Every structure is written in C-alpha cells, then in structure tokens.
Image (cartoon, rainbow, N blue to C red; front, side):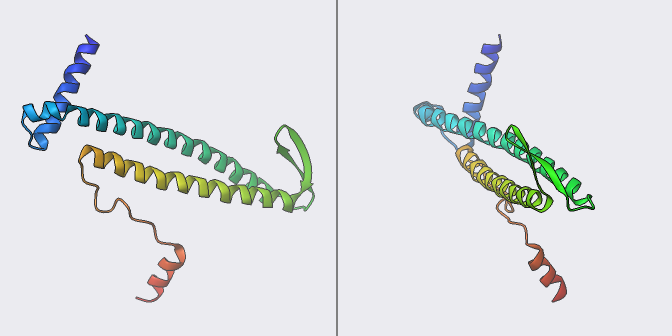
Length: 156
C-alpha cells in the first residue's frame, strides 16, 4: 500500500509539473526522462544540502567549545601554564600560546562554516532552478560589515 501511495504521489507530481509548464500529456510522456533526470539531480543536491547542514552543526559545536575554553582562559588572573589536550595527550603550555591556538582554531572554524553556508546557497539555487522556481529577490544578499555600517550611521 505504501508503494502504491508513493507511486500515485509521484505521478501526481509529474502531472502537476508538466501542467505548470503547459505541456500536453503526450509530450509530457516524451519529456519523462528529462523530468526524472532533474528529479534525481535535485534529490542528490538535497542530500548534499542536508550533509552540509549537519557538518555546519558539528563545526558550530566545536566553535562553541573553543569559545568556552577561551572564556575559561580569560577568567584566569595568573599567567601560569595551562593543560591543553592535543590529540590523545595533555600538554602543559603557556596561557598565551593556548589562547593563540584557540583563536586560530576559531578563525579556521568560522571560515569553514562561512564557506559551507555559501556553498549551500549555491546548491539551493541549483535545486530551485531544477524545479523551475524563482529565487526570492533577497536570496543572495550579503551582510554589511561593522565598519561599513558604522560609517553609514556616522555620515547620513
């Protein structure tokens, strides 16, 4: 019964797709391979988008643990050495060195997350194009940097 429901839903989607682009059913049947190819491509892109989202969540968790570690180092008053976990070993290093490592890790994680988000935007745009939908007008907007926003507020 589930297979039948999926098949009926698939056929309804197929018929709706070709009615939307004003094709008769005879020409729609000839265009079925193209539709299936587009459907496979959009499904593959959808899976990549989901994988990217999961990777962003994992990177964000790492970024939050680094932020917590930086905060813990910042609350220490003394400049003594601290224990840091590197791989499978604990190493005692200067506090400034540990902060430098954590700050560089934060920068790398921020860069990786922004790259993944930019790639996701391209993949979502490709899926929308395969579906024949239009992108919203503000889809590719980039946020303004703090310096630019500050200069706009200062000079009206």
